[in-house]
Structure formats: C-alpha cells, structure tokens
Amino acid sequence: MRSFGSPTGSPVFDAVRVPQENVIGDPEKGLRVALGVLERTRLGAAAQAVGIAQGATNYANQYAKERITFGKPIHEHQGIAFKLAEMEARTAAARELTYRAAAASDRDEPGLAKLTSMAKLIASDTAMWVTTEAVQVLGGYGYVSEYPVERMMRDAKITQIYEGTNEIQRIVISRAMR
Image 1 (tube, rainbow, N blue to C red):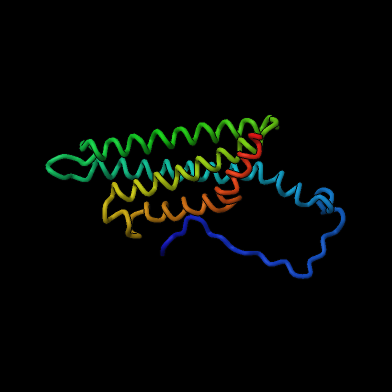
Image 2 (cartoon, rainbow, N blue to C red; image 1 turned 120 degrees about the vertical axis):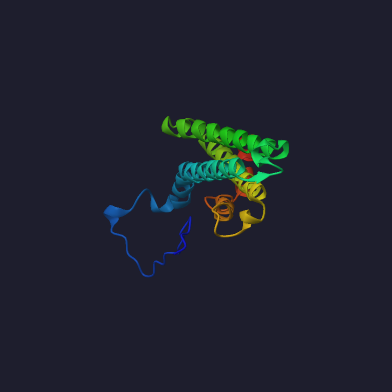
C-alpha cells in the first residue's frame, strides 16, 4: 500500500448554524481574524518545508554514500559533494529563520506577519530546491515512486502554495517594508 505525505480534503459546510457561544471573535471582522491566524499557521507550513528539505537531504546523502561509480561512493565526487553541502546549508538557514519567526510568534512581537511570511517563503522555496536536487542525486531512481524523494518533491511543492502562495508572501513582505 502506498502512503501519501499530505492527505488533503475539502470540507463542505451547507446550512450550518453556529451557536453564539461558539463564535470566535466579532463576526463583522472575520477577515481580520483569519489573516491574524495566518500569521501563525504559516509557521506550520515553514516547519513542514524544513522537515521535507532535511529528510530529502538526509536521504540523498545516505544514498550518495552507498552508490558506487568509478570505484568510489558518489558522495566523494566533488559535484555531488558540493550539491549535498548546499542542500544542508540552505536547509539550516531556512530552519533558523523558521525558529526566529516561531520565537517572535511566542512573544507576540510586532511585525509578525512579515517574519512569518519570510519564513514560509524561504523554507518552502528551499524545500522545493532541495528536493529537486535530491532527485538529481538519485538520478533515474529519484523520479520513481519506489524511492521517497519523488514524493518529497511533490510535498515540497504544496508548501509553496498553501497558507498563502509564495507570491502572496512576497506581497505581505513588501507591504511591511513600506
């Protein structure tokens, strides 16, 4: 049985009545409440993206230690070694920005929208780049479902889309810079 990394569904609410005691916030300010929630839920997407990137880096690194070409592990070939080093470095940078944004969220710091948008943008773009590189490290095996990096690449893509596309994150960041 094949597993999927991110099961997603579409709930449908038709003719639903919410009792007054279950209403969160002012019903006239729903958009403001929703946008405030996004400031924090973007962190989940950023953390997921960092996890995907680290998982892909780890898998590609282990594969590169075991795959032998020209009498040595491909990890010892400079092109692969440099690729893996950059995958690790970019993932670490995305992790640190995500940690910084999470700490700011915990302290309810001003400018949170900008910081969480930056974390989500950088972490998800990093995950997409890293997983694409992991597919390259594995060569033809990287693109088949028997190896996890092809699924990781698909999961990385969704982190660029949900909780606000990365284009939206760029708008949030640029507006905060004005």
